[in-house]
Amino acid sequence: MPGWRLRRAVPADAPAIWAIHTRAIRETASSHYPPESVAAWSGRMTPGSYVEPIEARVVIVAEDDDGRVAGFAQLNPREGVVQACYVDPDFNGRGVGRALMAAIEDEARAHGRTALLLDASLNAIGFYASLGWHEEARAHHELAPGAWLDCAIMTKKIA
Image 1 (spheres, rainbow, N blue to C red):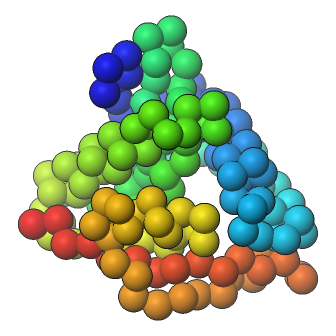
Image 2: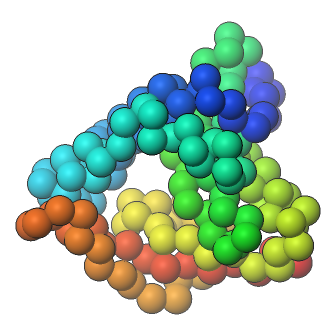
């Protein structure tokens, strides 16, 4: 990815990861979800919420030549679950998400995984399908009273 660098996240990245996560939900996912769901989903985390995953799981960030974090992806390698892949809306369509997912798959293979699972937001199904993921089922998660998040359960063989 020209002009980009992928690296493992460090705790100091937590505020940037939070900002990307929140902004991507509010600006990108809002096309597929009602306002109350977007508000509940994007309001669940704080910058500090990302420190534990950074330390305990595999979290990869993409940063540009100026050191700006443009996206992140998170893997629970023990369970083989991709827990997040979000790109700053300013960087959509530039290959950041694809590069992050390729790196996550490499990390999963290094941990002995041959298949992965994720819950895709409705707006991201096409993205994951373009990377070879297959929709297995739909799920309906309650984020808060009256706020629901529909998603697609997707799988991919990586061996």
